[in-house]
Length: 324
Image (cartoon, rainbow, N blue to C red; front, side, top):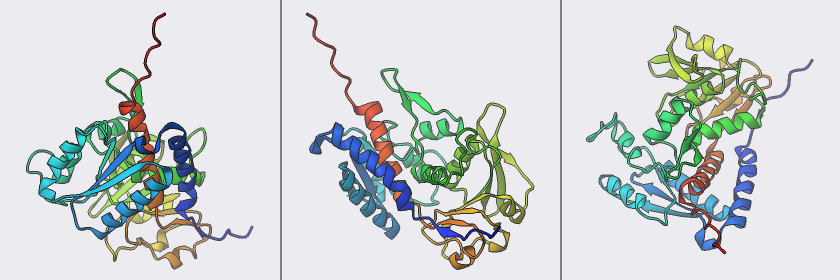
């Protein structure tokens, strides 16, 4: 049997179904000036963050959601977040990271960026990066309770969730067993993408090898059904050769995944703003699916999270019928 040709998947194909669903929900549920509002806070000069803000604004305009970008100095960011937490007209807050980068926290936590993410109210944390949502992710807790005791779906980080949706679209997920029996390599263990993504994929049954600059760990389900971190002596090259899926998010222009260890039939997802692979060389490997960008699906997940936050926390319950 002849080998299948490799191809590039346009993430817009994945995102479209979600945007259509969101647009339909917004149109049927909200007046134009009453749709849920997302505020993006820019406190850095990162050109990729500014481009992402423009994408988000344009996408929100298309689906009918309200969006505003606010710029401030990074030293003013904490106060701005608290101000937005208290604004009843704002239903979702996102901060364009990195802001302080690797600078240690002056307050609490590992870094200032981590501290800022924990300043965002869980009722408005559209990125799912505050401690409550991250803890729920690592405990594989999929629903929380709001102030009235109603069950509300926990918010998952947008880019990792976008990767999951792309894998579902490609039928990597089994309808019954999810990712059971799959081996996946995630390159880069950032707190925004790589680490939560590895945990999410492990929660769904995969064995996930998490590769960073100087270490390799294995994420897999423990006896309680939670994706957990385990020590491993596995070799990076061997792991690549065993993987049905490779996801790379290294934020370095010169980094390239070694192609000689990518096997035929692999799904390769690039979540970095830089292309982490030699595209031409990758597509010469039989039956490879290459996803060069996930940004549009990430924005769709951002909007999806915004609607879930609104419905779970901001939507006022219907009034009880008047007594006769």
